[in-house]
Amino acid sequence: MRLYLFLLFVSSVLGTWAQSTDEKLAAHFFDNGEFEKAEGLYKKLYKSNGSSIYIYENYLSTLIALENQKGAEKLVQKQIKNYPSLLNTLVDLGYVYLRFDEKEKANKYFDKLIKENVNDANKIVVLAQSFQRRQMNDRALLAYEQASKKQGVLTFYTQLLSAYRQSGKTNKLTDFALEVLQADRTSFDYVVRSLDVVFEDEDAAKYLQQRTLLYSQKHPSNQVYDELLLEAFLQQKKYASALRQVISLDKRNNDRGSRVLSLAKLCVKNQEYQTAIKGFEYVIDLGTDGDYYLTGQQGLIDALYLKTTSGVNPNKEEIKLLVSKIESFINVNGSNFNTANSLYRLAELQIFYNNDVNGGVLTLENITKTPRLRANFLAKCKLLLGDAYLMQNNIWDAKLMYGQVDKQFKEDALGQEAKFKNAKLSYYTGDFEWAKSQLDILKTATTQLISNNAIELSLLMQDNTGLDSTEDAMIEYANAEFLLFQNQIEKCTQILNMLPFKYPDHSLNDEIFYLKARVQEKLGNFEKANEFYKKIYEKYANDILADNAIYRSANITLHVLDDPATAQQLFEKIILEYNSSLYVVDARKIYYGLKDGKTKEELYFENQVN
Image (cartoon, rainbow, N blue to C red; front, side, top):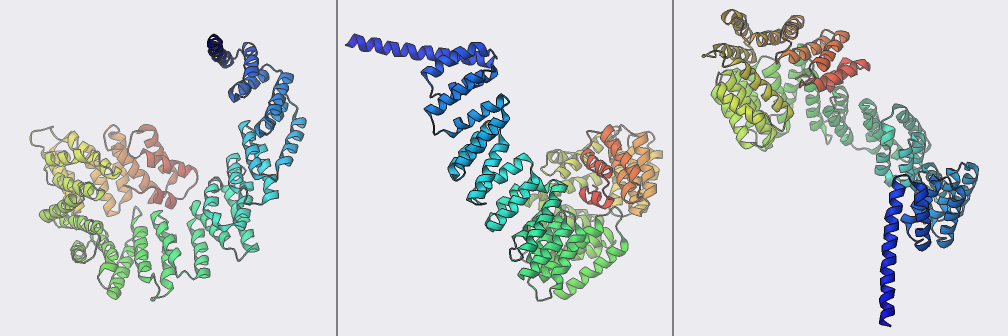
């Protein structure tokens, strides 16, 4: 008896080993396309282990590869007989018909299969998944569509939305999404996420808007369609249309301006200042006793400031009107926590646009005494105050302001900005070694703008110091740049005019032309500025300021001189000849924007000039 059991055990082990060896060999033949060799092994393996999905799948694929239709059908029919409840095997029979070009037979078979299971939700899901497994996605979609008609629109809505989306059937996706929303408005967020492919296509989005309007008119009490229309406008960044829609919703629901205010703030973030202004004005017009009146006023001032100062050449009359508007707002509402942001905007206008540095200093000093201010806002005020002190040549107090922010926000973008301003101050005053040490730290700053500026200033000093023992030329140039920052144009120009004579053939010559161009920009002589920029990129094409000069000249040419064709050539020059430039990404955006026919206003707000 023991001998018998031992022999049985050995026989079992040897059989398992043999089967394992056959499986590996069959798989080897199958993977190498040696299907005739694989077929015999899989036939033997299937006979001994028909329950193995792996063996069944490879055996079926082998028979199809050998164009053995009779064998493939026979295999599937046997599998169906052994496992009659497996829907995926039933699908395999129709799949075999298709593989051997019996399309009509396959279609009739599949139609019958769907019809037999159309009333069972679970079986339809399995059936559709079986179709998808055999790359018959249209059949899976048809199964869900027919079952949905029988069992209700919400039964398979997630599967159908996904199927329409993946197959690119955007119109069907839209129509079905609207039906889902009609049946269950709580599905709104899911539906909107599924419609991303519709929002990305202009024609599909237009169809969505048309159909949504029809549903809205047909079901006026169901506000979900108005919400969907708003979402469509927002996804496409059609903010003017979105504002009209949200105002309509605001009036209908008596929201007292809350959603309009949110949209106006969103428009500011996306540089859609004109639309933002209209939104804030709507909130203000709701009345002084409105919940958001003061917030609306502050938002309006902020949007007006950004719109007025964002251009290459800000309008002085608009600046004057905005200063007057802010002053009137402060006179009515006082200087306090609620008006601090508007006071900050007033200080910026006074310092940088209205040639009233003393007034700006007084405004900022008053803000810093205001209680309850957020720490980061107070830090912004100190940075601006430091700039104003520097304009007044009050170097010690400027250092103090920058140092306080640097210390308080050491690992923050505000702290990095403060450190850069302190380094720039040291550069202005000729302390190049200390400035370089600080800039080296900032080259890896988390803020890209600070990092880029640190690299540029460091390169300027590196390329133009150490050429003589005194570094006098670099000291005078830095002083000229400091005078330009202080708006002392005449003194700055005198130094720039004398430098080439005092230090002939010095490496600073391209920097001198660049600073002269910036002087002309400040004076509003943009054609003269362009002449200097042109000298740089033509005469000093390999120096570090060549790409800067092209970029600034291109923006002046586009936005001030209104010559898109020439501007496009200049942006193309950056792309082709300076592909490692810090400006190449923006240049490429503007270049292709011009080719696509975008207006200069659209392009400017998308790509702010540094």
